[in-house]
Image (cartoon, rainbow, N blue to C red; front, side, top):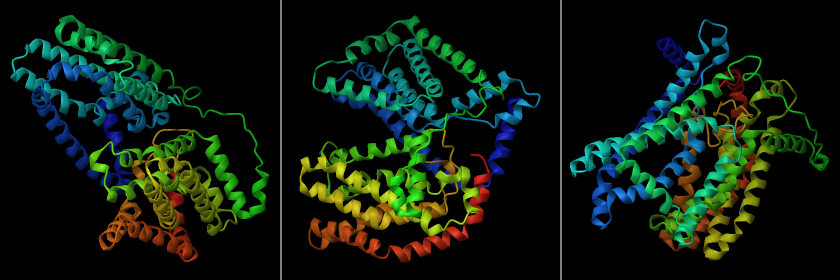
Length: 489
């Protein structure tokens, strides 16, 4: 039966309208997987000897920070790991048993890279422990316990998938605990270290994570099985409709009508609200670059890179999915007498307003000096004049239907990847860096910022010409986009 499911999954992949882009993405992801595999292998083998050279006990040091390791693993899963799904509704009318469907779906998660990548750290580290003379049985049981905790996170990710705000709560917990430990107010590792040490030194204790894993699997199995009913878990949830007039936007005519629609979309749907929340996190991205905490980032050439992201959070998270936000009613919209120019203009103004607001909110970077804030302002001008046009242009080729009720995938979908959007991503980030480097090389960093801002101003001045070009491309891609939106993600 599982072989039949694998066959159906393969057919679904190869027959998809996005097969070419999905295949290209998988090849690209394959190279990324290979890179991270080599990194984890190097860390797994070298960690023991690096810690030994630092006059630290390798096993105790690793055990001390495993709590943070598993916390960060869960956060990354909640942020990035997609939940394996099947097109279940048609299967329920066929002679497939519901337990088999659920077991297959859960089995797919076991092969996720988010689980396998931990093996490339723990297995080499365990091998080094054995080589260095640690007791074999203790090493094996300790490794089994840690892998059980990895898969506990895997099933927790499934159970917590639809729980809003948990990602922020977990991040806040880690930040508070790490901050308290850094300032020596409270050290959580004093309480977690004895447990992880006991997993190594107490033979029977490894069974605790194993039993917890079995319990989570059973819980997750019943949780998913309980939703496999056409008249219950798989039905579309209906909410009470609330009307908002936003009459103050009527003064802007057609532009105001589109803006009202976008504002309502953002306020009412889980996916869009999650995306806006993620864009706020971009405001603090610059702290990695401007605070001097990371030596590799504390370089002027990297600062303009940060300036683009600090002011462009909404542009990169929301703007890249225009017009996919309207995919559920795009076909209806295309039957109306709606000018593409007005539609695109409203999206552009929404991005511009969000960029300006982000730049104002980022004024706390003045703490690091005027040069830092001027870098953010220059990045904002470039985002308004150039990147805002590029994300709209990329939208013509991003034929990704979006389920507005789902919060997963705030940073993107696999089908949003194609050669056109990849090429359009290069000038978003590389061109301002190149301009800044050129100005710094010819004279000084201030000229570099001036060149970045100048290109942004030129883009704003010629926006009518650019909009005409973008409008033609949208019209050319119109029917391909409609056809793509008919397919379910």
